[in-house]
Length: 193
Image 1 (cartoon, one colour):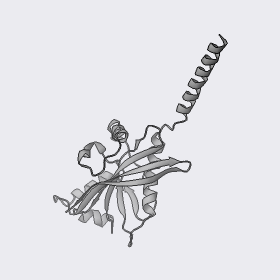
Image 2 (cartoon, rainbow, N blue to C red):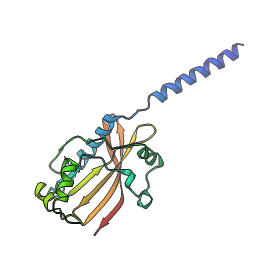
Image 3 (cartoon, rainbow, N blue to C red):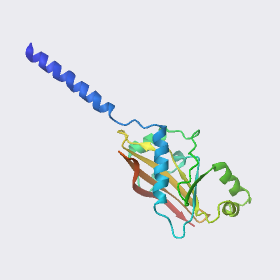
Image 4 (cartoon, one colour):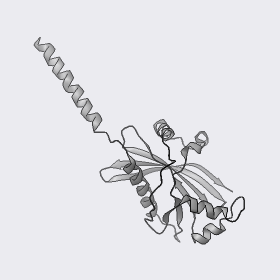
């Protein structure tokens, strides 16, 4: 009976330890989404172009669902793809940030109106460049997809530079004691016209 009690106590202790370790995993939330967005913009500010050319980041997250992932040059892990499929960015707006001279968040509707103003297909970017002098182009950042343990995440960063080039990168970020930091950048598509 004593041996059975010891096994039972050991089993219960193991279950409690497993439950505690599971609860130590980070559960991502909206504050992580914003922290990742900010970390990405700040990291991009650390590598200014010469001369500095601003990139306008739209306040509406990029729509990963509209991407043809099968044609991407790099395939993200399935857990990221599945996480993105479960996320809806329809009501989310990124905060209006300007962490440096080369990164500025602007309202998507304002940028769309500037591009549509000339009535040309494709747009000439004339009014866009009047509103944002020396701008290199337009970028969008998706909502993050998180790993199961909440220690890493990925975002899709799309960019469009005038009518001549567009593309997308998947940026993988890691979370440590100081917050979220970009760790890897994978170009997944690039079109130059």
